[in-house]
Amino acid sequence: MSSATSTGVTPKKVYRVVAVAEVVTWSLLIIAMILRYGFDIHEAIFPVGLTHGYVFIAYAVTTVIVGLNQRWRFGTLAIGVVLAIVPFATVPFERWVEKRGLLEGDWRSTSEGGPIDRLLVWFLARPILLVATVFVGVTVVVAALLVIGPPGG
Image 1: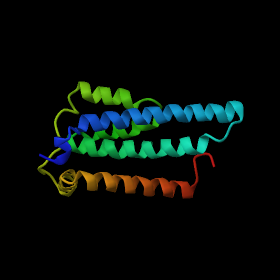
Image 2: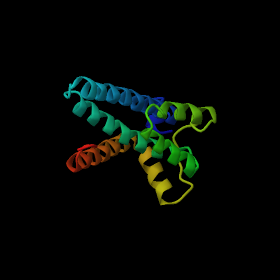
Image 3: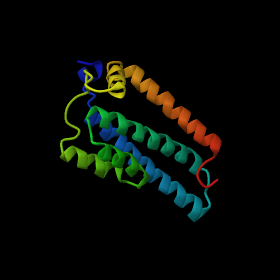
Image 4: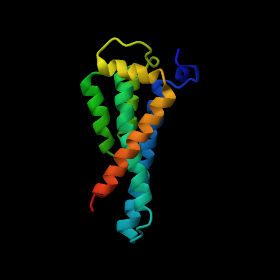
């Protein structure tokens, strides 16, 4: 049993939290855009946009990790990632996979597949390292995207 399991941190709980966080940041981003374009108040757009971008990428990574752990079909996993683009779609998707039993079960502790599966199980046995790696990876991606420039210039 992994330490994540003993603390009650299941794939279902993690996925629900991140899906809801993505919806919340979408809401904040839409409010910030209304303030910017409707009332010429620009101060909220950068911090809210940055937060949303971070959670958006974290949701995509979480979808991949949970989807691989739960052995989702590629199409289900891809739809879960792509739906982050659609405002407020992550929670209905999370509910959809939950109703189909695709979030049931625990984190895997044995590998039955190729190198990606073995790497996943290795990281799942080290949840603090997994969270730290995801945090650093998402931060690097967000930083790179900031260097490229925010959407719309």
